[in-house]
Image (cartoon, rainbow, N blue to C red; front, side, top):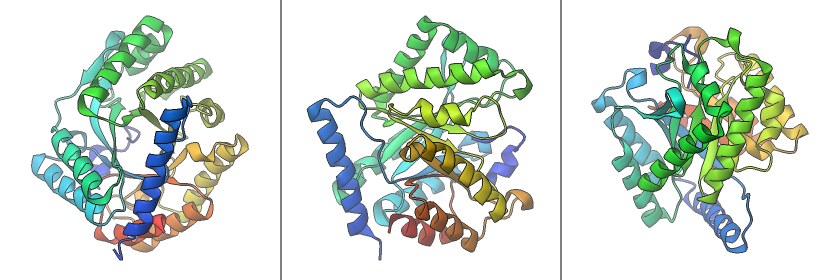
Length: 328
């Protein structure tokens, strides 16, 4: 989820609002139902959305740590009703458009249980977006990406494999987090081709009522903000900004405004998600303070951004109050 220069060690570090959240979730369900009944091709992405990431082995978490994180996720989703989506490390891209399935801790059964229990107890939706990531960042990854989007046959084969996995496990869609290591070789054509690939992916997922999310930042020319803010304009997609993984409030506000203005100018603010990190990037391992988290949530709400992604589990206990504020 982060630039490889951020090491795995850096990554480790009711009143529930139940009625309000249930009403909003029911609204999303009704919208999806209406879109299906009247045959609209591009329905809105679920909104509001508060998503967390499970990093699993790539961030050094063993099965015991992951089990604890899943227990916290269950509580935040079913009991507190402040998280309604999760993304987790599982898939990658290999040579010749191959969908790689990593041998990480299998969290799918637990996520399915959360999904089913939340629906039964809260009549609520819980969205699952397995990651398509570039971990462990092989040097050939950019070449593999180019193979993928330069061949319609490989593109279609890769997408079919993804859809097959989604239907098998009842996923809600995917979270694409392609981060090639060597940014010096990335061209403007690569950025354009990447958006075109994402559009094709989103269009074909939509046929099966599946959603696309993707992650971008400012440190690589692969992510052209102008293209991204308009590229998924008519597609079922969400663009999550990782540039907002900052500790300084002024820096955070600057990169936040850059993304908001780009998506607003294309009338696509509903396609923007803001990434939030749980730790302070300038202080190494120290957690972002409770005040800093609340400060960011307040700005996000002020600008009517309705999607957030939090990197990564576990969340400090004091995140509960800001998350409740997000849903208010």
